[in-house]
Figure 1 (tube, rainbow, N blue to C red):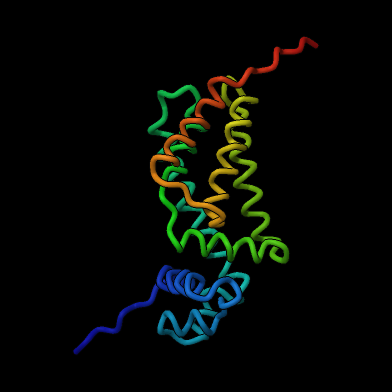
Figure 2 (spheres, helix red, strand yellow):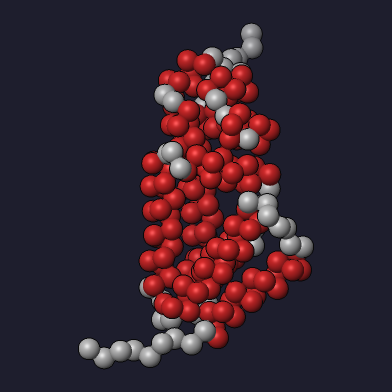
Length: 189
């Protein structure tokens, strides 16, 4: 007697990612995910209620994984001049794949109409900005972070892909933005 495989929420989100990679954000639907996961539409609706909720769960999972990876990189950068910044630079060294790009495009396509997605991404950015402000050179960290964000988004949205050596040089240059950026003198009040 064969055992029926139990489909988990992660299995459904994996199926949603495959749909997004194959068909883009416009192809993401409850029906498409159910077909991809090999489950009934009612199962997907039971777990996620709407396409918006499904996309939000997908984003939550992706952001959670990215934050966990980033925290590992921050911990590994404990002996650097600004662990939060240098950890983020190390995290950006991860080569992006088609799933990363497809999910980013799906998020981007849905941002204008999905307030919950905007909230998730805003919180992520605000947390990053607070981490940059917490170091000894907050302005330098902010400038390097902005350069890093531009670099990362350029690759994430597939506007350009740099070779491995080019990526390493650019990330080193971003580190130099931090180390060489002049902090404004403190103003006395």
